[in-house]
Image 1 (tube, rainbow, N blue to C red):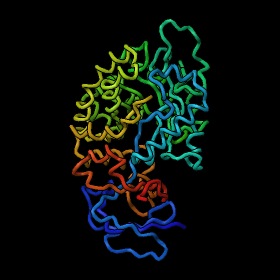
Image 2: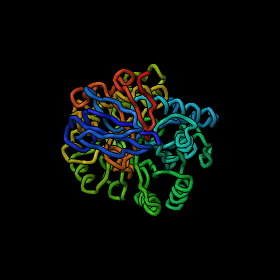
Image 3: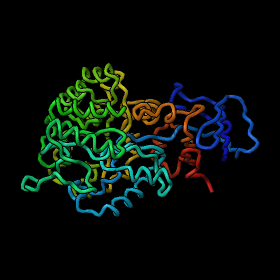
Image 4: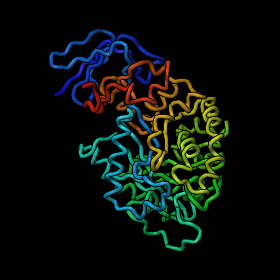
Length: 408
């Protein structure tokens, strides 16, 4: 069994308020065996002195799309599944080397990619996937242009969504994604930026359809995540039992408080709007998306203020697509306009692990947790921008006890 002993570490463990000095962490196999403020001994362990650096849990991004390789999701239907999978493997490798040791794909990835990571056929973060997202006709997951009359009932394997109208169809679609190994069920409960025909703040799916998805997920011991922008869409999703609210740009304070009382999580994804505004022309963003993104961009920071004030469990997500994935780490600096570095790091570790129902196996440094660990050259609680330069500031990346990055 491979063992590693980290000594003299300044520890961010996702739990204590701030950093803890002079800690020692023993990893055996895939897990953390011991954590102590006193020296530890291990005859067989490799010793790494972390003095002057920060040891912290691996990062978790709770809203990615590793198969979304195009500016227009509709064009994904035309791409060979083999190419999509290979491209996704490249993107996931890049995410791992930014320090993200776990990710939740919020529509598009499948069990094949998750299995490929687990069996080390490809190098990437641990993948929790939601299969295809469920959308009503004309909803955020319906990417047909107004003049397209093709029946969407048989979307190909490379698509991110499936059209399901009515309670029975929603139940069947949810059951199908769960059968195929989905970690949770994704639904589209309001309009979106990249869909061509739906108003941004419109409501999608009836309450009975949302409840049907929630019920099917709960029967399998899991939950529903809902794409939502408007405050009304968020509120009705919460009322119907949705556990994970995605984006939430137009959330109001009372709804943020309702989310907190409901035990729900909210996952803002602010970097995607900044990316679309700054690089939209460069990547050929459609005109309908350009118009919509300008509406949601300014509201994003205000939503963080309300969520912080309400004490809502706020996770960390990015929601990037196509060539914009390289901006993933910029989410840290954007949030720093409202949140403290400690709050940001907790969102990307402990809170997201709780969302995934994986705490305390992930998102912390404690005995029995999986050994997902980063060594940061500096103090991210003093300077969160360190995480925007992972190639220079993250010196070691360990996932499940195995090093994927370390100095030569």
